[in-house]
Amino acid sequence: AQARFGRALEYGCGPTLHRAIAAAPYVFRLDMADWLADNLVCVREWLSGDESDQDWNRFTQYVLGCEGRRRIDAAAVLRRERTVRRVVRGLFVSDARWRHPLGPDREGFYDLLVSGFCLDAISSDKRVWRRCMRNVLSTLAPGGTVILHFLAGCRAYKVGDRMFPGANLSADDVAGVLIDLDFARDSIDVQRIDCPHNVEYGYSGILTASARRR
Image: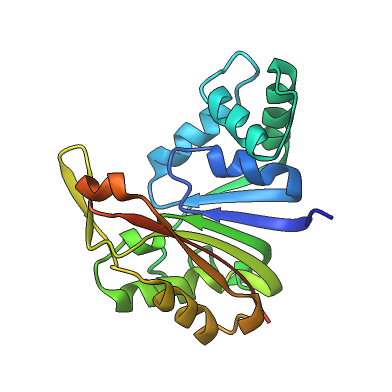
């Protein structure tokens, strides 16, 4: 059976919808948060659009394919994107360095938290990363599930001509902080996926992690 979650949060969404497209069928409501208000403006513009907006169609098709759908036509894409527009409720400007990134009233609020390539890109200092993990994951309710993605062993990564910090994480770093933050040991699953062709951008792999809070 597929898991279903009541309240979900995507933290560090950027100007993108691909994680929301993947999560939408499994949640009752989805909030999205990012450090940059301009990123949320891009998200809001798409959410307020309709089927004539085809910016994310290709990503929706890909997500449906990953789910094993045999028939992926324009109608299937439209149905999924309508679902996204229906379940996304709140857009929040947030800073993971704040003790309560979404305010004290959102502590222990969400049943599902998804964050990809965000918390490890705030600083090259692992101590900052650990604090950000504590802060953001404090929004997760007891028994809640977290799904995380990080760049593996990345001290800095390149986008265009600019370099951005990386926290140089290993699978052990991720598992260790999840244990420290009271996630059930037997629920913690951390995997490394090699990406050898991305060495020129500052990393050669990604880490995926999931866990359940006690």
